[in-house]
Length: 319
Image (cartoon, rainbow, N blue to C red; front, side, top):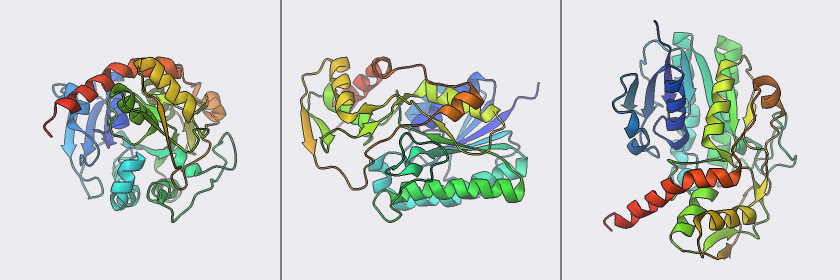
């Protein structure tokens, strides 16, 4: 039987590695490409002996011959605020050059293509919740612009390849996703809170904590991505959890799940930090029959052992 073959750029990252698992579970042969700027070999160590899986350490902004492909999933990019603040130029490169190269690979193979886009395309939104039809409220020169504008440009390139080259494209706008394999010092809300709570430190809340986020557990996110990959939808689709929490509510849930004695510590709100973030998933429900199943407290419990072990490993590491 001719097994389908998929390329996952950013395949050693948090979400990319879970996507590799999902594709293997559906019978694909998978090539994961990653330059390990923010990805980690530990995320794919469990796949080392799977004959259907191949890892290639490579900067996906550079040309490559990947052979015949049935799907290309372009998931390479720093995604946490700490990472894209540190690697701003690399973030812009992978959103531009990397997207062109991934699309060219799909075009050569006549493969289906999926871009991992982001809720950051909506910026600090003036419309709430955010439907795919909303064009966003983004500062193009602010500190977050290296990520926001890289993804917005990547969406434009993806749609151009569809219009001009008839590439079979899809765009998933991913909202805050969490779960095992996240970097413990990720800079995003849940890893930060878990790390601090498990160390008995105060949880850092920026602003007054009233800003909101919507958190989607990684298994739900991957299921939505795979359903979109199988669909015939070519315009962006929000895949995220529509249940909204304030940062204060999230912090208190983390303290409860970890059984921590941590208190809250308030710091100034970073520039351009979105005040509200919640997906309108009407389109995903209608077209994909998808909505998330794992609520936040359950997802935190499912993630707890991973974060606990990551904290222990960090403590044991040489200074």
